[in-house]
Amino acid sequence: MQPMKIWLSSAVLALTAALTLYSAPRPAQDPGSQEPLAQGGVIRSQVSLVNIFATVRGKNKNIVTGLKQEDFRAFEDGKEQKIAFFSREVALPITLGLLIDTSGSEQNRLMAEQEAAGRFLNRVMRKGDLAMVFSFDTDVDMLSDFTDDRAQLESAIHRARVNAPTGLGPMSGDVRSTAFYDAVYLASSEKLAGEAGRKALVIITDADDQGSKVRLEEAIEAAQRTDTVVHILLVHDPGYGFRPDVAHKLTEETGGRSIEVSSEKHLEEAFDQISEELRTQYTLGYYPSNSSKDGKYRKVKVEMTDKSLKVLTRKGYYPPRN
Image (tube, rainbow, N blue to C red; front, top):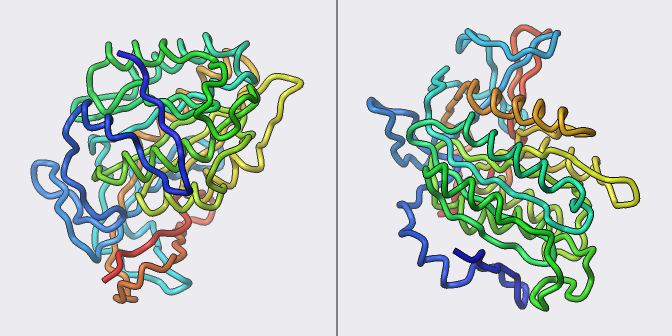
């Protein structure tokens, strides 16, 4: 199956109509505000509940398990919220997007990245999980829609190529083009928006955007609106752009991690760290004291009663509008 080209036109962001050929979408639910797990692992729509996924690490940077609800405090816009739901459930399904930078700066590393990415999906995916694969350079290409078929995902990963200009990309004719922000925006707003539960993007890139139609802030907002955690494996070659500041901002705002990768061994280790985090998260839910549905951004903060512990969560969310 050939990858589908995805691009932005006249400031309107959309996937091509052909996306529907892959599979019918699952029912959409309001991101960031869902009922917690009911019996049988079903998430039911509930407008006012805010879900927060949290990873906790200790002084030695190892992930801490076995914590209880009273170990956490949640705040919204500076006001403490009563935690109404808490879970250490590790089997909650994950909907995952794997985004691979195929711009010229990645040409010397792409094969190693593909091998490591395939092994990562095999390790992290369990029954009930879904994943999709995108590549991005001058264009954003969807190589596989959501599926639990490991062979299909593996094939999609290995179809990623360092592409020549096609005339469709944001900087047509420039092989340095890297539509990084566009890829995050599209994967979040056009694909993950219709999914419920835990959602994450794992991106292999140097984070040096060249010519996207949207700004970094818009890419971050798209991830936040769809309750998507972004993890970045920051890889780069000498002579090309390298933006750890961008990677840090994008991951910090969405509750993910940015890991700098300097070798193939470190790439494997970074994938292992992301895999561990995706499988050892706590879920906290609260009904916000601010019950207005104004659609405006709200800051979220989670603190630990044990100050020696460090918690990783998203920094905010957008409530639904009336």
